[in-house]
Image 1 (cartoon, rainbow, N blue to C red):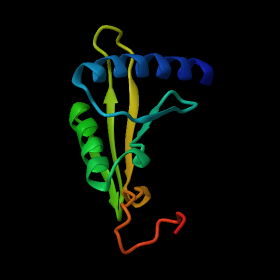
Image 2 (cartoon, one colour):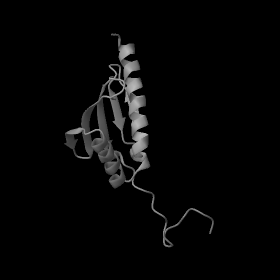
Image 3 (cartoon, rainbow, N blue to C red):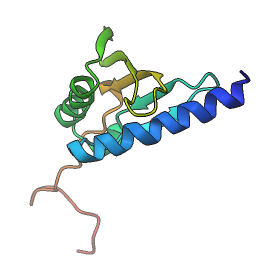
Image 4 (cartoon, one colour):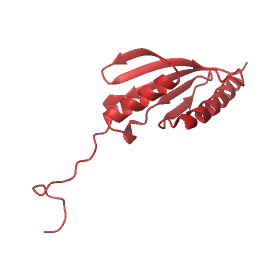
Length: 119
């Protein structure tokens, strides 16, 4: 099979995966289909606080019965093989969350802090 064929298969599996995840109301992920048809799902940390990002990753880990393969500092990685039952297709799935990239929520200015407006 060519790499394009693998990518098409991976994209088809991703479609099946997202259909199932929608029924479970899983949080959004950013997805990439590699040239070999593997799927990489990364928590979009700019959407979440650190705790929410970790919880989103854990929901996907649980949904796919993924095995946690690496944790270092803020980065956590889990892997699973996803095989939709009706199609028989399958893909290697890697789930990633990088908590070091989480943007802290903007704080509201207090009365003691200038807001930049006219005085």
